[in-house]
Every structure is written in C-alpha cells, then in structure tokens.
Image (cartoon, rainbow, N blue to C red; front, side, top):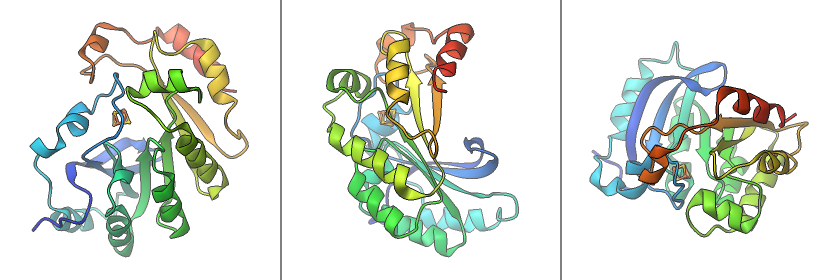
Length: 229
Ligand code: SF4
C-alpha cells in the first residue's frame, strides 16, 4: 500500500558508494522540484514526476532491514525532498528503524530544514548552492526565480547546525567563471563547512541545449577546485 502523506519515492538505489562520503548508503529519489536547473540530470523527476510510478515505502523499509549489516544510512535526494510536507514523518520512520539520514537539498525551504534539524532528524546534509548569491547569476543557474534570502537562511542553519554538512556547486562552462568560484567560496565558514565542486557532465540534461556543451577540462577543473581553499 502506498502511504499518500509521505514524499513520493520515484526511485530507489540499494547501494550507493558516492552519496555519503566514506559510507555505503541506500538512496531515495523523491519526485518534484521547484528549480529548473538547465544542467539537471534528474529532469524526469523534476518535470514529470506524476508520470513515474511511486514506490512502496513499507516494502523498501522491509528490504533495507535485510541490508542493515553493510549499509550505514539512507540518503534522501530528489528532485527536492523538502517540498514534501511528509518528509519529517518519513525520516522519523526511518530513524525508528535505526537508519542514519543524509539529506540532499537545494536549500529553498529553510523552514523545513529548520524543523528537521530541531527534531534531530538529520545526520548529514549536502546543499547545492548553485552560484554566488547574486540574483541574476543564481536564477540563470536555477532556471527560475529564486528567493535568495531563503538560500542564505539555509546556509546559516547548516553552518550553525553542528552536524556534518557540505555546500556543493556544479560548475558549467558559460554559467560559472573563476571569479564566481572565488565569490562562491567566500560565502561560507570554512572552519565548519565542507565545500565541493562538481564538474558539469552533458549526459542527459533538462535543457537539451546543454547536452551540446562540454564540462571543464580536467586541468581547468582542477585549477578551479584549488580556488576553494
Ligand atoms: S539540479 Fe536543480 S532542477 Fe535538478 S533536482 Fe536539483 S535543484 Fe532540482
């Protein structure tokens, strides 16, 4: 039976080696997103989640129980999971089964993030901060109007949270320059926040024009990554 008041799980990966640094985790993909990043790889989840079958949460829980010995936690990704009012309920249920939780978010719903943090429902968070917090740059990367005060509030919540967290940015030729990376990195408290850049990969993008682009060369990407420190 599908639980209608829980976030719609549109995808499930039993084992991910890359979504929780140093740990093996299971991965949930929640449908729906309020951004339209042109470089997004998960666009079916963003543009047409209603056309995708929702998976049965109870069945997934039962399955996860058989993997307890070698999985360290569950990463909830999307889409944008914080759009779903039922997210605290889902995480509470996972926590009751003993699972540590990592959340992937675009940071646009600080009120949900604050609730999850206050209720001790999160063990790790990765927040995508798409660009330096200037309106035009950010909206070009997010593909839609963005409330930058909400993004700033989420950054502050995580910075003060005391839980492991990272701010990450996918960098795309034509959208991000070396100056942007320097300005982006200045926005964070380096003493408590981990910063990561991801290089753009043209494999299946929300805006098909981006499939014609290339990522940065390894040399340029490495030079840009060095700007974070
Ligand atoms: S990359 Fe952008 S559009 Fe895609 S899921 Fe993340 S925030 Fe949403």
